Image 1 (tube, one colour):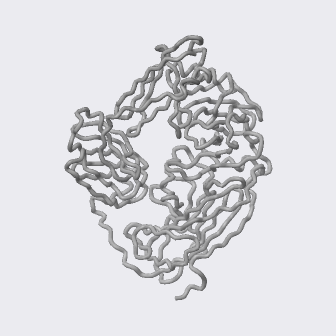
Image 2 (spheres, rainbow, N blue to C red; image 1 turned 180 degrees about the vertical axis):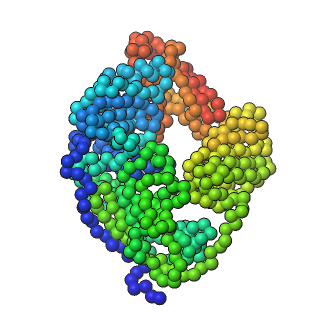
Image 3 (cartoon, rainbow, N blue to C red; image 1 turned 180 degrees about the horizontal axis):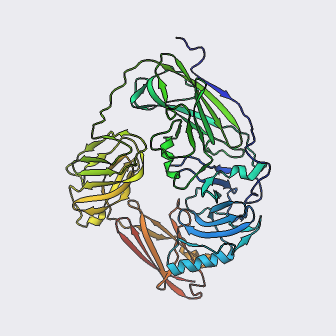
Length: 549
């Protein structure tokens, strides 16, 4: 049968059905034009992005304002997000403002005091309700670039107080956010179901571009997926798509609406995302509330007739901008290889699973997978190595519950068993997942399938001073601290024998800073700084420096 039109064709249209409200719930967090580097529900490696990333024009210390009337309900500081201010509003929402550079004076003093009392950088303060009231537009802190941040910005989470669910903030700002750019698809994936389908005579997922003119042939049960991004005015960043709909021959099969989720649901992003493609079907272990299937088969497509099936995607952003894509899949009878469900490598998602190889065992708890999986595992022996290398699977599949992996030591060039660790083999080398020695094995929890072996780390961390001559002038001690194998496990700093806060402002950099605070450090004299840094295998570096301040 000859196709009546090119295999892939693209329909594009923009509409604006006004999901944003004319009566905004919130005022902007700062003055000036609003643009974003990340949006709500955007796919991250291990979670959904829970809020909006507001650009601050490359600047820090911009006053962040209260979005409405309410009270400051919590102030925190941690490595991942820097200073954090939570505000509970009178309108039924709570916000979390992350990556701040500074706090209001009363909170900065309180946080400093708690840090020195607890001898920890990561602390929090919870005021009494209504103790610190704020009015719309009042400053609640200063924007920054702290924590896991690739540039100055404000990350804003909005949580519905009644349900404790993270919600998309964009509609709550009304029409002050300009967006007339529709989402764009960059690729499609067809996923033959294990032992039930094939695509182009293959049992593994196949990908195609929107302008691909190849005639796809499939048979049996398959799932579809789309790689697509949304774009906003004034930003080149790729953002997540609010709504995805899939129709097959004009029948609605599937819809996803990414507008709310709970904190616990966030890690399940990988039940939906596969290598950046958004699945248009619901896997058995998927517990997310944002997906609906309408065909009685969780959105899966059954190709059982020798004809053309039309797949029609509609992509919509939160502002109502919309794009459409259609392509055809030709039903053609093909052999579907049988799967040996009794194989030691065939694991069911709703059971406890064990994998045992010479010198290795791993236990996957019930619910570690979101669908049945056939592992492509193998052993790579090397009698001269510390341990064999074990491929659990040929892909880095995320687990939803940690599995317990233990690998036996075949050679012990170092007698100290604390120096061994389990590492995942990557293109950049061995990535440590830690581990402890137990009866000839190194044992660790893993959250990702892949290839693992045992490494050894006897090299202590590196500690170096940075611009030491400027410490007194700037009122800051700056150090460079790094470890190339198992990472920094902990560190502690003292000045004249008393604890001081030594923190890492930005997790993308190796610099650590100690602010010289006259409340805790006497001015006008020579001081002794002592820093102890320990890596993941217990290797320790101690440095001492004298300085005048």
